[in-house]
Length: 281
Image 1 (tube, rainbow, N blue to C red):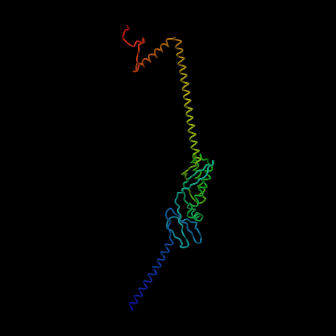
Image 2 (image 1 turned 90 degrees about the vertical axis):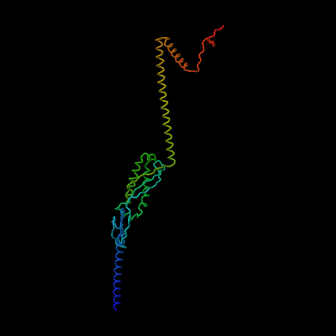
Image 3 (image 1 turned 90 degrees about the horizontal axis):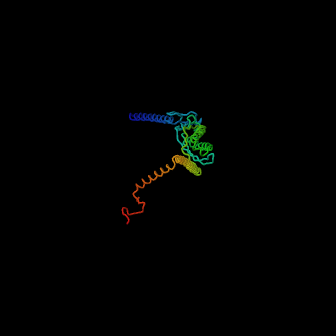
């Protein structure tokens, strides 16, 4: 009798323990499903089954939600890079290939609107289309040569127009840069031909300048010779034939010194007698 009462008491204790354990487990499960965590660099948008997407943006940390009724959607608000390639035409009908590098992120206060209108892949849906649109509209205002000589101005125009266009979708652009710019084959050949023509023109200009310098040198040389001849003529009138004889002696002296330094010169007597020192009989 006592044994059966003890067994019954033990069973009662076990039943209470099971009830408490089940209640505690259900409570822990309910608490777990009622909590969600938002990491750094992220925000949460709450979808309510009765009210739809709530306008409030949930910041970082651990927060409560109503299980089954509310579902949090985590969105990344950190800056992300993206490259957009676009082939378009210039004002003078030259084809240009331009690459843009964008640094973008969603505006925090516009996250509910972005989630409802664009979804989680908002950058994939918006940036390529508006990027090509802005590049085509801006490049069409410039000639191909201006894209090279006024690259800073073109980059600034693209950045301003693209920033304004992206703001319509709740997207903030932190930086827009032109990373690549190339032209078609015809324009490249035209640039090469222009460079060759400029080099030829520069060469021709140098030849003309050289000829001009040579002409001036010839004029100066002729003037100097004329002045020298005039001085000699005046000196001849004053000194008579003595100046000419002096010049002849000086020239003969120079010739004699030159021939004396040469080992291949043989002096012969003026009389034509090759046997020196012998008297003819």
